[in-house]
Length: 230
Image 1 (cartoon, rainbow, N blue to C red):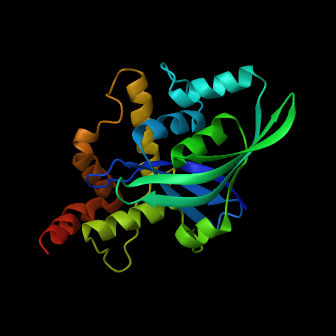
Image 2 (cartoon, rainbow, N blue to C red):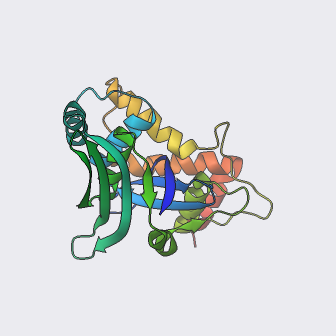
């Protein structure tokens, strides 16, 4: 099993998909990336946990975690052993093994969970998260020298939009290097303050254009129009 840490959550700009958000997991060596599609209700608790933000209204997973802690249940680790996609319904599911420690001793529990629930449970209970080598072989992305999760997402979006960068042009990632991840955190915090609706999907197209404009800088309009005209 490969220890991983949760690098962040991003909007994936998927078309007609319930999995509008993606969780990025990095192995401890930082050389392989695993991307899991999650739904909005799974994304919220993960973003809150990563950014130490209290939710004004608890999600179901938060209530479950608080209940387990009140019963002195400690989650020793979460192992995601298999990953499957149910094609008729397009739901993603993980076969997991949870190792618990209680006043009665240790025990293991096999469960089938949504990917976001497995990740959220590990984060909220501060338990190590481990992924099987089989999953990394099936879905893992080997990161080349200097490549980051943000670059993986950005380049995928460019391919999806049919945009080809001119030779020698670099993407603009800003001071943090993670503009797509940062944008979602900013939206999330604004929604909690009542300054924006929670993760508004209705303007997804505009958000995609804004992100592309940031990435491409002064060449954005020419490159985007060029791709649209092909």
